[in-house]
Length: 142
Image (cartoon, rainbow, N blue to C red):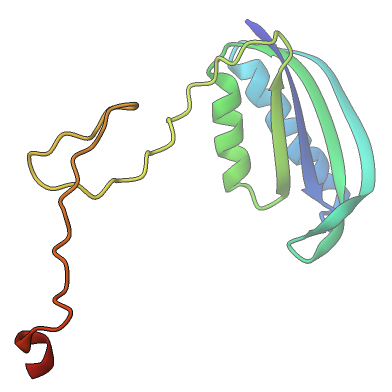
């Protein structure tokens, strides 16, 4: 089990009972996955540094908990789906990055079929460009 801190922001216009239900939802999610909640700090309504979804403030919640490594991804998935949560961030307090996220895709390079990409530090072959005729009959006919 790892120690995590998750901060999430609930929309400021959410009713008090619905806000408490949202906080309880994520607390029970931790407990049902075999985790242990150490603290839930309801920081209250605070002003945003910049507008988010045309809103200027939100209700901040900081939750500290112990959980298996797979739980933060599930919590993030559910927070993305939720309409009440504006932003969230989860930090592993053990200093390990054990979240299995997909690696970013590399941009596709333009290459012809059967060509191998050049290795770093290896010279690439270039084709000479034919010179244009300066004073030939072909240049004046065109």
